[in-house]
Length: 394
Image 1: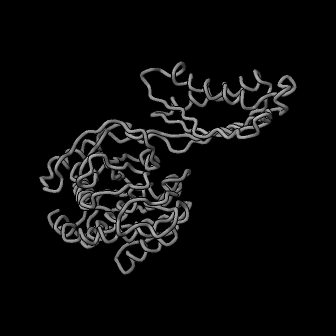
Image 2: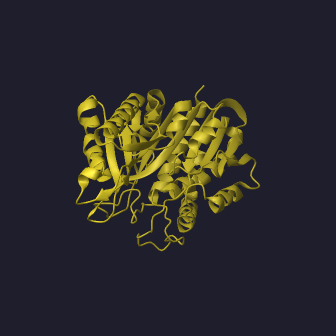
Image 3: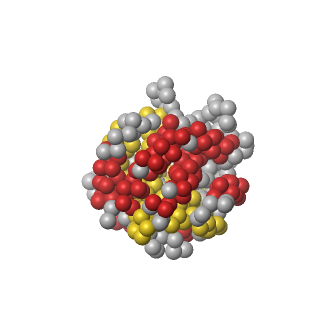
């Protein structure tokens, strides 16, 4: 442990250098060819197993076999970027127009590369095996995690750990939560096809806009009148495409929406009620509806026993860079790390990264998102403490 922590401290500047390089060269989900090559090249010549093009994209799995028998643990970091034009005023600004590491995946990859390299150098002293999962396409469903699980890369794994940088606290603060921590999400698209007509003769037409407007208001009753008040659910209409001419009754519109929930029962209830409302719209307005519904990512469940182990490990680390370990509330973003957590006991925790001097930091996915790069060393140390302590347990 002491050797590992000392090595990480010596290589903090390297983590920052890697993070800035990746930040300058972001790539979108399922298009991360150059990023994957960069990661693969980092491991060339090292005494590890390397599998590339893992899952449904550019995923990479690196296997570090310890010198002594023991459990198998996986560490995951994602490396895709977002379709956002960067506005952050940094010298290492994105060089790819309209693409930005606005969620911190560059930081995730940077810390894990250096941590993995340190663990490789110390592997003869390790009990067990460590799988390093560099995952593609977290931002775009179906994502990369599900395909990695389906390909069998977690079949021999006892536990999975992951982190996410979040500007909810300064660097040095680590947040954890047992049970459900991130929400699940689903997407729906509704096409309403009616009979258009002239604005002066509405009785000769069936108005798709009126039918759509009724759907928008009625669908909110799913949460307010069908869902148990003690449960959490959100239905958001994000797009209503009904632009036409002022005196023409539209013959078709298209609506898109987002659904959030914390358990499969809530998801199924919302979907059931969504279909019932759509059926009612067809009957009431004599229109034809086409509903496309896709489950994005399930809710992220942190194994309570494993998360307690993470919290206790970090609370007793006595490390000057880990200043505070706190329990956080549920959060409503979604994460495809949830697929790993469905397969094996997992714990996904959070690394504070609020930039120094910022009272109101820009949150993830904002074009001005940035981090305090001290968070890189905090991430590497925290995961280092967790994985070595876990493998040391008999």
